[in-house]
Each structure stands twice: as C-alpha cells, then as structure tokens.
Length: 68
Length: 124
Image 1 (cartoon, rainbow over the protein chains, first blue to last red):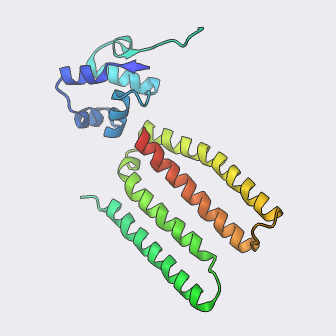
Image 2: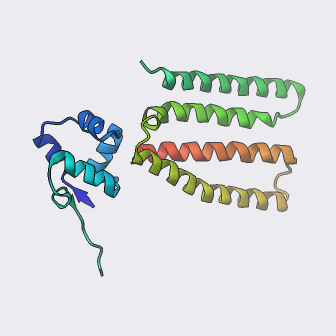
Image 3: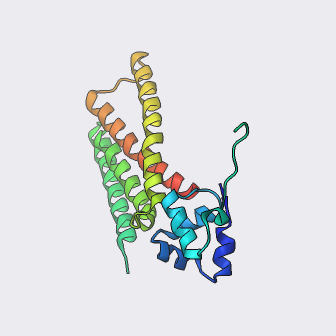
C-alpha cells in the first residue's frame, strides 16, 4: 500500500518528530510508513488521515493484487 | 536525559568481561565452562537492547509488530538449529553433556530473538 504521507506532512509544515508526537508513535514508524516499508494498521491510518483533515483514500493508495 | 541506552552498553561490557574471565579460568583449569555461552548471549542481549530501547520505550504498533515477527522468525530458526544439533549428536560429530547442550541452546535462543529484533528494527 503506497501513501502520500510525506507530501501531506510537508504541505502542513510538520516535521517527522512533530507528527510522531501528535500520533504518539516513534519517529521510526513515520519514516517506515513514508518509505512504504511498513503499512500502518487501520486505526493508525485513520488517525493520520484525521490529523491532515483528509479522507483515508486521499492519503493511502491501495493497489490490488493481480488476479483479484 | 535518558541514560538507559548507555546503561545497557555498560551491562553488555560487564557480561563480556565476565565471559572472558570464565574462559580464562576455564582454560587455566582445563575445563571449558558451559556458563560462558550464557554470559556471551547476555552481553549480546544487552548491546541489542541498547540499540532497541529508544524504539522499544515508545510502545507503538511498529515495535509490537517487530516483537511479534522476531518471535515468529526465531521459532523457525531455533527449529533449524535444534535439528542441526540433533543430527550432529546422533552422527556423533560432537559429544555434549546435557548441561552444555542446554546452555548452548539457551544462549542461541537469546541471541536469535534479539538479533532478529535488531535486524527487523533496522529494516523496517
């Protein structure tokens, strides 16, 4: 699952540290999500979308697997 | 300021020194100390924790995921290690006492779990 977290974060002028503090997660979690190494759970994805005031679909891009 | 990470490094050095002492005493006494492996593994555990602690103290979902995956992967690694040990003992490649074998397996278990956590924390 790809995401536009870095883009939204930079548009809002938030640092990774600040966003991590708001979401109460570690900075490594934010880095991993931004680099698409880790997909957040649904509650965290909702929290992130809520912070930016957007819909979850605007932030996260779901790519269906082949054959589905 | 949080000094816990540095405290783990100091404890790690202490355990490695203890392992060194046990090797020295064991070598002088002509008997290999089985406790040495445990000391080495505890040293590795401490150094791993000094790296993991800043991430572990924040109990977020990524760390829970890392812990979960580390235990999962370690299970299979340990199964492999035990199979190898079983084979080596059956084929009489090595001869180990029960105490030595348990000490080695305990140490390998500790090392495997914590090193897997470090690798996963670096990767994700």
